[in-house]
Image (cartoon, rainbow, N blue to C red; front, side):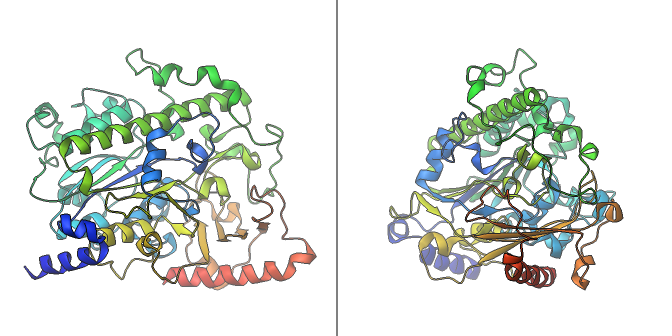
Length: 509
C-alpha cells in the first residue's frame, strides 16, 4: 500500500494537471529498438527516398532528440548499455566471446523492465536479444523466467523468422510482420490469437503468458532490421509483402552516396585498419552492390514505419492509446561508404548518431513537436522510462532521465560525451572519443596488439594511442579534415586528450 501511494504521488508531480484530473494510474510503456538504423534514415531527417510518415508523426506528437548518441556503436555492447544504464567501460559487457562477461542477474534486476515488474507491471520482450544475461550453461534463462512474455532469440533473426524453431508458431514469416503478430499476441487479453500460444515451440512455450489486463504493461520490441544480416533474404519469396520486392525500384537514381564515392581513400594507418579483414557484408566499395543494400535498408525502414502505424492503431482500438508511452530508438548507426568505410564501431557521426523519439500522450501541447539538441545517449533511455512511469532511478545508472529536458525544467546536463569501442574481433581497433557539439577527438590503439583481447583497463593507466583525429564539427560535420596535426589547434588537441583521459577514469567507476 505504501509503495502504491508513493507511485501515485510521483505521477502527480510528473503528469500535467489535465492528466492528473483524468487518471493517476501508471502509464504503459513500449520501447521500439531498431538495428543499424542511421539518423538520416527518416523522411524527417532528410532521406531523399525513404518514406516514414508514422515515425515522423510520432516525433511531431512527441519529442525528437537530434543529437542522440550511442556510446558503444555495435549491437551487443550497445544493447548491454541499454539494459544496464551504464557505459561499457563500467559494465564490461562487450560481446561475450571476447569479453567473457555476461550481465549478472543482480544487474539485470536493475534494468528498467525488471524495475517496472517489481512495481506491478506485466512485462514483455520480443525479437532480437544480443546481450547475455547470466553465465553459461543456462545463459538467458533467468531473463526468460523473469519476463512475463519472453519471445526472443539471441543473435541475428534473419528476414524469415520461421526458419528458427522459436518462431514457428507465427502465421507470417517476414520479420517485421512476424514481430507485429507477436506484439499483437502480447497486447490481447482475449482468445483472438490462441493459436500463437497453443502452437508455441517447447523452447519458448513456458515463457509466454497471457497479459493481465488489470496491470500496466511494459514491452520491449527489438528488430534485427535494417541490419545487413537480415536484409539478405528480403523479397526472395513470392509470399513476401510487395514492399520488400519492388518498393523504391523506380527511385534508384535518387539514393545519395558520399561525395567522391567510390574513390574515397581511408585516412587511417595500417596499424589501425585493414579493409580486407572486415566482415564481407561491411564491404561497400562496389556501387551496384551498395545501391541494392541501400534500397533494401530503405524498404526495411518503411516496413518498420508501417509497424509503428499499426501499433498505434492497435493501441487506439484497445482503448489504451491515451495512457501508453512510446520510445523509439536505434542501437547505433552504420557507415555506408563514408570515409571509405562500411560497418560500425568506428566513432564517426554515421555510426554514433541515431533517431530517438520520446512520445507520451500526456505531454502538454507546448511540449509536443520539440526538437531538442542536448547531447543524450542510449543510457539515458532507461532512466527516462522509469521517471515517466513514476519510478525511482537506480543509483547504478550512469545515464540521466531526459524528462527535465522535455519539460523545460532546470537541470545540469552533460556538455560532452565519451564514446568507445572495446570490440577487437573482426579486425576492429580499440577506440575512444570525446564528442561535444562543436568538436570530436578520437584516439586509436594498435589492432594487431589487441586482436580478440578485451582491454577495458588498458588506457586508464595512460596507454599512448597509435593515431589521433580531431574534427571541428561546427565547420566540418562530415569529419573530412583531421586537425590533430595542425599546430594551430595544438591547445585544443591537448585539452581533448586530457578530457578523454578524465572520462575514461570517470566512466570506469
